[in-house]
Amino acid sequence: MTMDQVREFERATQEATNKKIGVFPPAISIANISMPSSTRSAPSSAPSTPLSTDAPEFLTVPKDRPRKTSAPETLTLPDPAKKTL
Image (cartoon, rainbow, N blue to C red; front, side):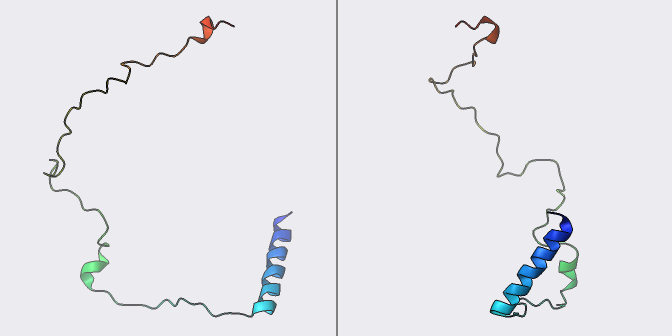
């Protein structure tokens, strides 16, 4: 299908749908709402630039955990050059 054929199909489908169920007005309306000047600079979810490079207190350095005994120290894979049939 060419893009023109796709557009024609979509137009015909929309037209048939409108005839069958009717045309509905949009359920959402957008209005201009004035906001206080403090919120215009950035939304509250925007990250702020840290004042220092030190990590915050709640981010502590993770403690070393002992390795599980079932985990191998290194993973060894078979060498494909030495593969035997």
